[in-house]
Length: 311
Ligand code: SF4
Ligand code: SF4
Image (cartoon, rainbow, N blue to C red; front, side, top):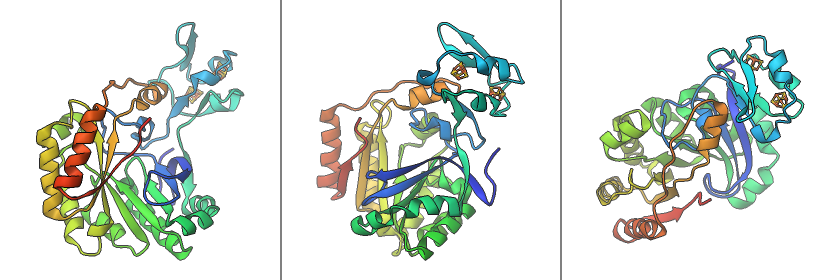
């Protein structure tokens, strides 16, 4: 099961989000991303295909999943509980049906535009009172460009504004087309590292396309003010003076006005384990370092700065 022109795999629809753009929002997390950031906090959304995810705390150890699995992919042991052999699992989801404790489930469910908007519309009153709306996020929305464009268009017909959350790693024309749509009010644009070597090492791709797309958005009078730069900050990876200064100089040159700082957190580690794999643990910059970075962007580059996502 994967994404189609009529539906995308949605990991979750998060209602009452307050850190995914202005006001109160419903954030739509779509599955599939061309990057593989080593600190990703939604690693279950990287693979565009459906996957089985475990919730070990729900497991009551009944062993039905071991008996029912047609592929013989499930075993149990005292140390780890239920173990899925991902090389055998074909994601038939029969174990989900048998697991009454809801310890096994698909990562995402396929949703059409109408299904997404029917749920999002329930909170339209909150959007209208807070200048909120829907945020389309992932994963990476540019992997579903046609679907997301139609979703934005249909949201507009229903009087709902949209915020785009993107890594910028995707088709430039599709990105610009979405960004120019009237009801797109804000664009959360990731800047993981301005240093291409660091970017390649920690995300798996070069930042050249990302910076090129950012420059295009910033050069257009109808999109530049929609930009809110988002910077995950990981100690020893992308918080050096050199990286921060070069980033600030780029922002000044292209005229962006807002930045969100997102200090690292380790919530991705257990999700990665539950979907099959391991994730390295990093550290957050110290409070003192965060304050220095905030001060620099505010006072030297003249940006509006918010620090978000503290856990
Ligand atoms: S069926 Fe569910 S509750 Fe029972 S052992 Fe398997 S995962 Fe655990
Ligand atoms: S999804 Fe199907 S193949 Fe995979 S572990 Fe469950 S029952 Fe077995």
